[in-house]
Amino acid sequence: MLPVPHTAIIVVAAGSGTRLDAGAPKAFVGIDTHSILRHALDGVFAAAPAQVVVVAPPGFEGDAEAELRAAAGDRAELGRVVTGGETRQQSVAAGLAALWGDVRTVLVHDAARALTPPETIDAVVAAVGSETGVIPALPVVDTLKRVNEDDVVGAVDRSELAAAMTPQGFPRELLERAYDAARTAGADYTDDAALFAAAGHAVRRIEGSARGFKITTPADLDRARHLLSAASAEADSSPVRGARPSGALPRIGLGTDVHAFGGEGSLWLAGLEWPDEAALSGHSDGDAVAHAIVDALLGAAGLGDIGQHFGTAHPEYAGAHADVFLARTRQLVEEAGFAIGNVSAQFQSNRPRFSARRGEAEQVLSEALGGAPVTVTATTTDGLGFPGRGEGVAVTAVALVVPREKGGESA
Ligand code: CTP
Ligand code: MG
Image 1: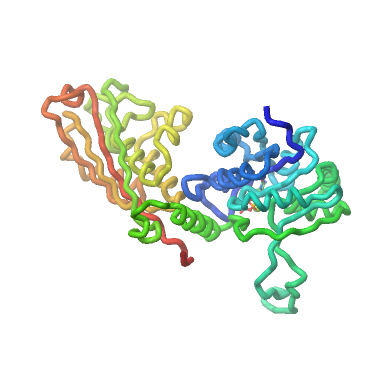
Image 2: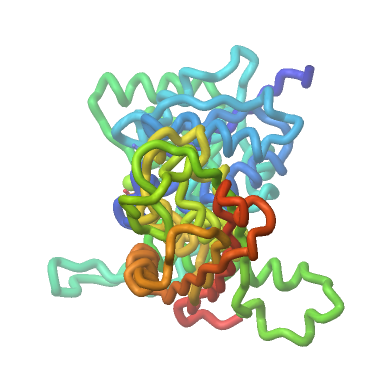
């Protein structure tokens, strides 16, 4: 048992990410091979031990739990997941309700500030007073104007301003009371320091870090990707490192799959239905060509394997065909910062006779991958092995993915 900490960090991750618009709740969008939430939690667990409460969007509690466990390592017992609300304030309130009795200092942190250094977290904890809150903040560098529609009506002295970040830290009881007061008053705040100050308490600032910026728009996500890939290129001590151009090389992946004949209904292979052929068995439609391609793409992008993303833990893919698997794979690959170059697959089997429908199959598979070229070849094995005996199909696929341009920032 770890000692019960007197500090808790509430990581709010229940927002939908409307402005990022990435097809999934923002916290679960990949920066590299890891999600925004995972990066935020890596930072949190690299700081001094604290209770960690992750506030997840309804329906994503299981995903949040998995990220929490992966980040926590041997501190898993310090973490738990609760369900968020419609506003950030409601989500924080849900996190506050899950605090342990011994907690005296509470930090509230946006999962969206995924790259916040652990040093900032520790510095906020250290600066919280018995009656004062603390925020990390950065000086405002832009020249600011007061405007009325399109008219500039005045200057703003930026020395009076600071840009607020998270984690924001508070004495627990005063924060809880301030939250109760805000709820009773029906007031909605987007930031905890404002809510705390409205209850009459003082808030101080410490120096924030530029890495603590909030991922709000697609450009912010690119900035995070850029920072991480620059860091991993620096950490790469391979002897050939100097010989390659700034981490922008294409990457290849390999996938194989085998399915036995003996499924129900008709055969599905290479994205096509083959009505008069014996079906393959499998969790989905048994399309071993599609599955090998998925593994090749995931492998190329460093995203794990098919079991992780589509296995029996995902009943929504039972019976799904190639188009569904490949479209989702493409999304994962793109979210990780890659474009698909091309895919080549070969299956070994006596049946079906493939050549007459090769073009059709390649077109279906290519469309499911957003137009990336897909080629499929077929071969028999001279009667040898299980494909030769007609017991099943064996497939090998390779895929190439290419790091996407990083929106104009230099290395
Ligand atoms: N948040 C939350 N619950 C909500 C709204 C927001 O937990 N109902 C969290 C977000 O997950 C995020 C942080 O509050 O970590 C800051 O919010 P923001 O950056 O605005 O995220 P979203 O609300 O998800 O994004 P958008 O406003 O673009 O929809
Ligand atoms: Mg929001």
